[in-house]
Length: 75
Image (cartoon, rainbow, N blue to C red; front, side):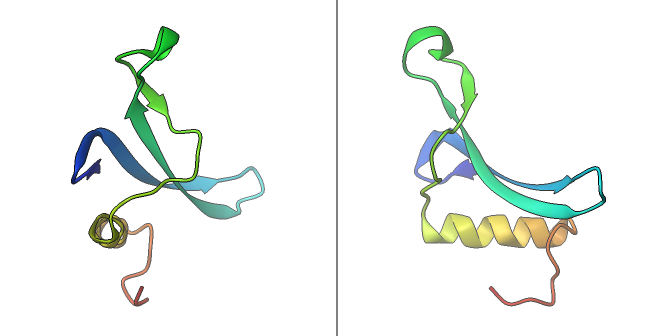
């Protein structure tokens, strides 16, 4: 999902399944690189994501619609 006020940043909420069957959620982002070999290419964000509150709410709603998060929980 693109950040509403920064179109060169895309947020993801991923459900990862490990070899033992455990599932965990990862929040991350991709951003268009500004320097070096990643300039003008999409790169995985290496820091804690910051984003507008409404974008987080929309990301949670999308995860609920796709079955990654339960619709029964209120966030």
